[in-house]
Image 1 (cartoon, rainbow, N blue to C red):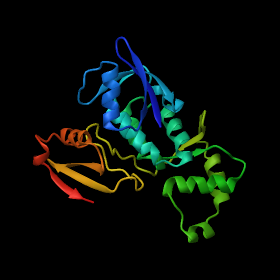
Image 2 (tube, rainbow, N blue to C red; image 1 turned 135 degrees about the vertical axis):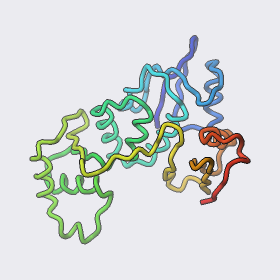
Image 3 (cartoon, helix red, strand yellow; image 1 turned 180 degrees about the horizontal axis):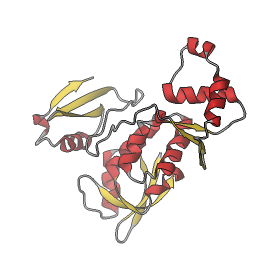
Length: 233
């Protein structure tokens, strides 16, 4: 959950993300901010998580905030601190960069406890690979990997722990600043629909509000929903 305090000239209000499109419209109307696409407002304070306080005192695209919040719902508990540590180290103070970081967390390892070298080595391999086969678990000397990692001298001290950049992992830009990439909603939707126009695609997760579909079509640059091609997944 991301909670922001947003304000207009005379009023401010707290809003939590992810939220429904109707909720966003209602809140913006309450503080007398004209509807626009995309909705951009001044964010006075990030109430939670404090790891995203780098977004304070900025004009932000709330559609991007909503999308980032949906991505963060799918993170493992340990990944939150990693995201905040990377953002602070890399100086990521824009939503586009933060969204792309969530798709590239395997490019970094965050070590928060060095009491057990086997755990350090296992956490490092899991950060890179995502999962390990039973054969890998049986044959791998995790303690050696842990010692090698710490003795490399490449650890970066952060308030969240020791951060290592996994240079063998190539950073990929999933979000181009216009089209929101597909993400795993972990079974919350009944159906996913790919909307295709001009060689690009966005995804909607049904059931959803009509405004969410309209926004996807607008981001694709299509003249109307009828000009798009739809694929049920």
